[in-house]
Image (tube, rainbow, N blue to C red; front, side):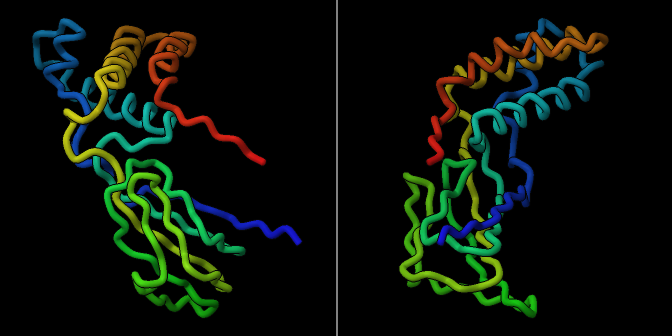
Length: 184
């Protein structure tokens, strides 16, 4: 019998920094005064989140939690990598008490960004908290930074208008960094 699990993803902490600097974006926009700094920083945050959700990757270090409810698969992909470290793995019992899973009961593949359990769990819920992203903005490809800069420029220059067609060029910039997923 085929069993389904419900998987919830929650970002537990914001990124430690932006992947692009305010000065870099102001230079890209040719803005010399400080009058719009708050607006530009907000647009950098929005463009960065868009890039992360579109590519399903964390750009800068942040904390995530995956919660599996129902059937718990033995191998769970820790999305929004690159994976830095798994902070905790907890079993949530039917009475809502939590038990920390011993590290000897699972294997973590940092390169593949997944966790694999050595045995099957018959439990209510499993919570995995992990850190993902880059520790240094220099490790983020220039093409992604360029996409963020373009997104900020589009939003900054068209902040009065409602035109989402301009984002197609941004999506094209990010496309090589999306992973192809096949659902069987």
